[in-house]
Length: 240
Image 1 (spheres, helix red, strand yellow):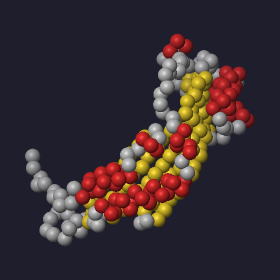
Image 2: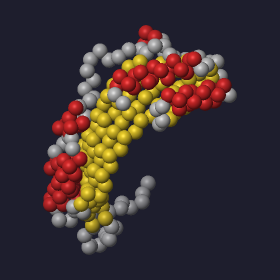
Image 3: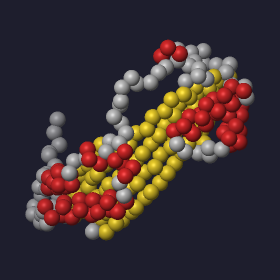
Image 4: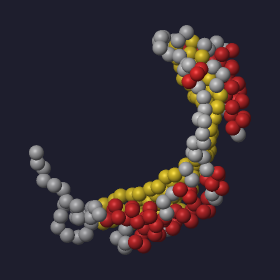
């Protein structure tokens, strides 16, 4: 569903809530898609391409509030969801302080928030797989003691629309990109508190777009450094 379609559905749900008996209504629509790749032992361990949609409706009847949610964005199902919410609200306790915000407080940002990158939508899964495998190999090549606990790459796009019974209805899109790796290293065979134990750590980078992430070399290097610096650690004596 595109942004215009989401706005029309949110406005319809808001009007329906009022026509079915609600005094106030707030509707939030969410639509998201995420692709995540994880690699371990030089092979793809997991490839997940998931999409989700949901609607959340908060309504009130005589200052009695209820919130209902569903992932079925069909008009008939939403209408039944609203009816259920109204029935729930009628048995809730009254909240004399509940209410919608002042209309003058509603609005949209007057400048670009820079939270969306088209670059995310152009990234192919094959490229993400290649990056995850390269990240793991880079970390293991830095030091022979490193054991990979898994590298990952993910990209996500999310669209949100908010509507209420004051006549407000707006939406926005945002994107996420991340890359990271978890490493481990075995303690050296010597006397100490950690003989036979593994030390582990990780590093990751997150941004609005893939081009804003730290490089594969930087992420791998920091994860390895944070892991190796734990080797040889000893437990301090108990003291006051």
